Image 1 (cartoon, helix red, strand yellow):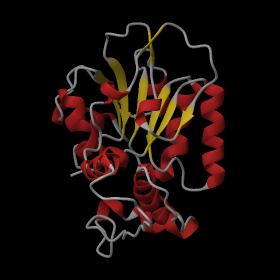
Image 2 (cartoon, helix red, strand yellow):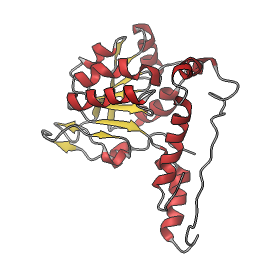
Image 3 (cartoon, one colour):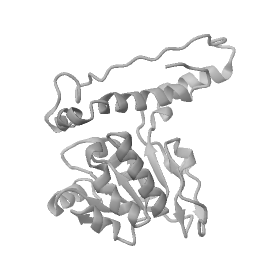
Length: 250
């Protein structure tokens, strides 16, 4: 079973002091991403955008980890309304978090060190622009944008802002991929891999033929950017596949 967000602190080196190098834009792996902090022992202060009490990726993948870790502390939640943010804060027991209804207001919160973006890809630009313009560190779920043009604009914003950015492709840390990697590393249990193949389907209960109401926006978005669904599934599937130590051709 995939663990969407393992203990990042085990993989993320903490950095003490001032960073002088150019902004790094990292498309996974997680172990190349680090946060600048003045106190290496203090939890990283997070502002999360898109944490809903009604379900979704943030509630199922992020909230369980963030509720039990000592390495990160959620101090801000931003949804479409203050009431929605307050409801999420109460639902997930984030008593130290402040509610926001504007990404721009969250970006102006000096206490927030890292902004996590868990909203629809079609809103990434408008949601992340204030964070990058404020120089925040950002973790944004894959894909970065719905097309190459907007992705390029976001990359420029990130570089100009000076913060560290990671696009989340965490499948390489799944138990399935890790197990295969251990067999390959041993060498004598599977022998020499001569060929590999990769196949998959996007017809899952959430976004397949009988699409849930909460995911209907994909249908509208696909009219202008029909490549978005293959991009999502290929990114999450192909990168973990290629992280294994054999030569692959997809």
